[in-house]
Image (cartoon, rainbow, N blue to C red; front, top):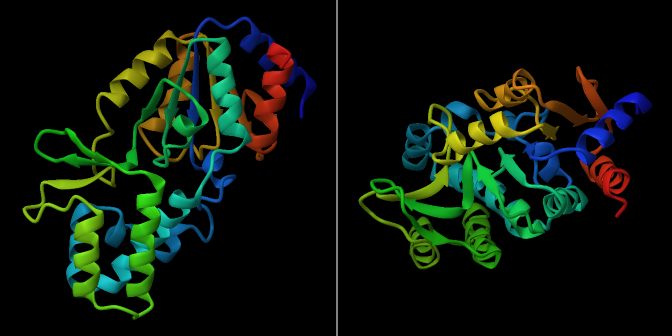
Length: 268
């Protein structure tokens, strides 16, 4: 790790008034949740045109229901089993020292589980079901509920129960609406980013004096524009990544670098 960059990061955080922490899949990967874009990730096994749009999911459900069940199983089971890690805990700790907004591309709710209060989920949340018409949240899942759904899906994928039996179980486990009004609160390809989370995220970035970018590939737009937006507003942008990044770069895994940064900046 470049010592000069570490000193810049520590002093910037120590003297900050408002902080934004921008997180991506790399943070949750340390909790055992697979990434979508890395080599061998989800989009390699499950092509986006079939699994990352609502139309694609509907077509797959009608033509290859078992394959869709396998995809959903691989999405929800890791989230159901995940616990927040040292990076999530360090981010929460920053929020106890400074006004902090967490802007996350993750859909797993682990920032909230770790204690972060102001979390903007710009890609939605797997733990929520919304009414499409009103946008209201009609259900929030506990992880135990996701585990029960994963068990049902696994039995169907393994050929141990019929599709009809699965649908009957899912009807009890999930607030299905046969007219299609209820769906997971997720942002898929072609969707606008979640509101009001995205607008609030943009405002937070414009008001911050430090932005910490961690675990994000920088390949998903328009979210990837947030660090540059912060730079343009005069904020110090700190990037935590195993691979080289321009600017103030702290090399390493989020679960190692973030706790060390918090310790250096705040002493505990």
